[in-house]
Image 1: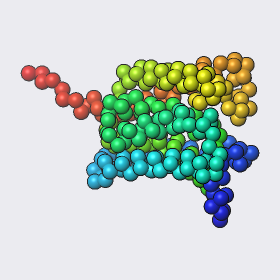
Image 2 (image 1 turned 135 degrees about the horizontal axis):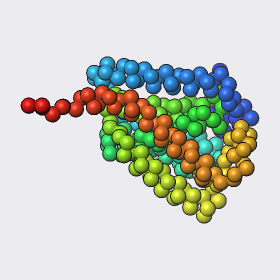
Image 3 (image 1 turned 180 degrees about the vertical axis):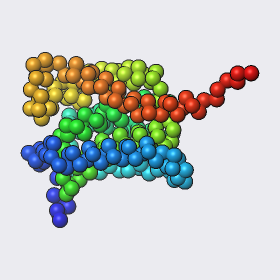
Image 4 (image 1 turned 90 degrees about the horizontal axis):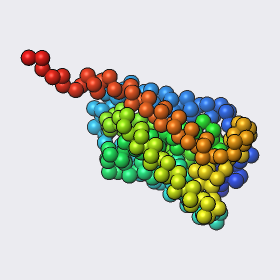
Length: 253
């Protein structure tokens, strides 16, 4: 068993142990996919669960505590750096916005934030910069703020029946670009690299060297964002036939 100090090691102690495409990485991806499929398959039974609404409050609490401990570790160890650790990473912005959805039940906000539960976490899930180790807090933090965030978006879609439609793709794309523009301006003024608008991470360049040939991160981020939005819409499409059949048909008489 690791000591408490070892369990809360910061990310700088772990970067040389990055197990990208190791069995732990594939296991978490497979687990997330499996749970997503089960949420869809058993959505009718889950809708009858008496705690289905309470779950969103519990999960909002879990997301908040996860971030509180994450930042608390940096503060206690005296390694907090505002140029790196502000909650301006896309996954963290998505997480806090989704907490607001879970606490308020705002379906209007969900129509946009749902897409961010994909375009933020999914690229990080596929190419994580955090080692997957069962004896380190950061691995659990990563799972909660990425895999679990995406799954809770699906829970709201499949079980709580929050609506998303085709028009919301354009709204999410516009919101994403406004966010990118704001963070890019912040990075230019402060010399930071939130949402990777200044440069792509070294482990991404190592995997895909061709990305450095066209050194405009915003272009790759735009392409990645559009791909994430289109992927996020596919679960919505699964529900469309049933929603259409549930609409009362006009009388022929």
